[in-house]
Length: 244
Image 1: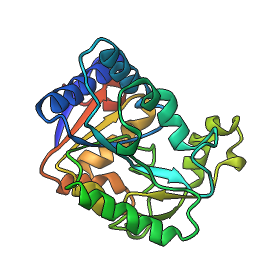
Image 2 (image 1 turned 135 degrees about the vertical axis):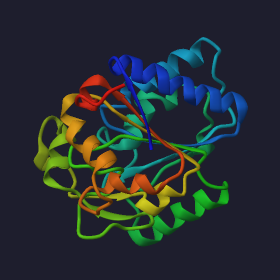
Image 3 (image 1 turned 180 degrees about the vertical axis):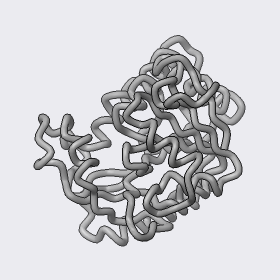
């Protein structure tokens, strides 16, 4: 597991945007796995700017997002699909047919999860998966539990995770759905390359447990230790004193 420590969140965003740009330049039909949340907002701003400058062509790129709230339609203001439209999709030349998302309104959640796994397999898997991390060590919506789910699944959200998403719901954590659909840990580990980004001191304990702790379902991100091509890109606060 490689760790890069940069000065601040702006440097993290620029660095990871450069990695994405380099991959797309080398492989124009790259398959990207994308996160939501506060951490990647700067990254998406960088990608928008580079696309506007003619530096990145998304016309053949395919994307799969990590997760979506259960019970929210894609056009709901708080859905992760709306988040992605707002911060990236509507600003770049990514064809709508190449955008893959979990359907939070699916009548059969288990069947929807199987459909998503099949769609990822059909395109040959994820070339690059970008991850954020929760303060409790969750990746996607794989929360700390007694065991982890390998494949895309229906997940119960921890209280802290619901609080961290409250801004999407007018600051009301009680309005955040209690469940979501999420890529599983196995789905994540099947990606050819993984880049986890983390900024802010609130993530430092989770990063420490991810890198230095045992592999445990109590820290789902610790399973990244099993992958052969993982990089953590951190700002100095998230690194929590770890040396560059």
